[in-house]
Image 1 (cartoon, one colour):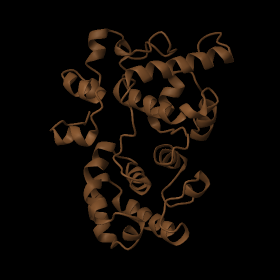
Image 2 (tube, rainbow, N blue to C red; image 1 turned 90 degrees about the vertical axis):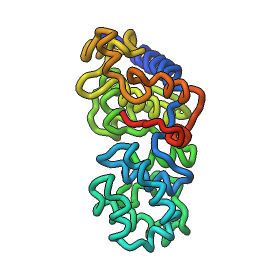
Image 3 (cartoon, helix red, strand yellow; image 1 turned 120 degrees about the horizontal axis):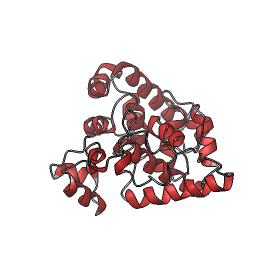
Length: 261
């Protein structure tokens, strides 16, 4: 929170930050590739302790082999483990995927449930994963509190909490529910590209006048610009323009663009 900032002032500043992020990242979306709720659920479980880029690299073969919950529930553990090995912790993740697929088949007629209270009972699924699935596959508003969102919410002065559920509640109170899902995407995009954990690129940030943590990172504009990642990184202007024009990640990869940091 800014010094001497009222609750109303905090809410107004928070919403202004959201508007600026919307202008900066008009192409912000869930960065996991998926075609339906089951694919998104699986991809999100796999994304733990690894990058979305790595998950997106292995899911085409995974979903070609196991296109739905029924197929995955019948998978041989060793074969499933081998397909997801690059994501790390592949034995534990394979166990979770087998268990959640079996429950979806047995208890939900093979369809991913569309309620948070059901999703969080599935193996490997917590509130973060549930909110990702609800917001992006079912259109149910939710705030996804991952490490990036947690870091930026505290830097923005939106909360002083460290518990993800309390952060979700406090930040949610600052915004209209209809904005929660897109807010999550924009904040995470900004955390991955500009507001890094160790050395934020403050001098290249569009939120300098709105952020009480400005100055924690590099404030020199030229030096800060060199810290930017993904499509904002130096020399990637063409990629940025294509993303702003609406090109999908799959289209960009087909054109030979690398989407890693």
